[in-house]
Length: 227
Image 1 (spheres, helix red, strand yellow):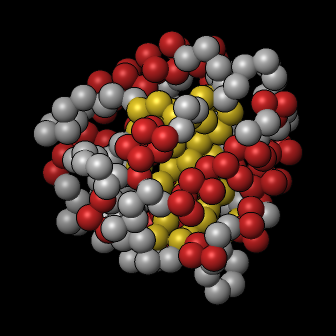
Image 2 (cartoon, rainbow, N blue to C red; image 1 turned 135 degrees about the horizontal axis):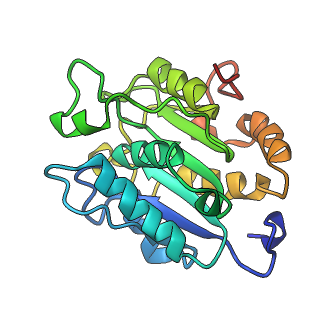
């Protein structure tokens, strides 16, 4: 990936991955990316039996502060919620280190059948992110509907992309390596050039470049207005 997209072109970008609850096993795409890409690093979110929002946010903040390169955040499920919570609390120093974020299937602690372990994340933050972001949803996700995911994208001032039948993007959904997601990460990173407004205009048109499995009838990605 070209490093000229960042303010400090001498530093290659680093992608920090935040897994979902029970995100274990060789079939998990985040684990596959960490094992095969030198630019990806997993953030240890600790025990998943009783996750605490403040603890997870602290762990992410420590990971961001330790990084010596521009950062792209990729969060899945509760990992996406951790990014959203951290975005509302981060310092200006941490903010400058983040080039952008992908939030894959952010879980909904307000859903009637939500996992009780998500309750610590309610209510979800309403802070508009200061960095370019994209919320990604699946047509048949049992955890968060595309409409709810789009609502969260509006709430956070992020773009929105809707994939086909990918379930909750979990190991049990059989995505394996999830090459379409990896391609999305690379294309998203290519848009993150100096100037946040330029990056967001690029995200507006990213849908046309999504892999075939991600294509949906009609507009599948757009930059929602905050508020």
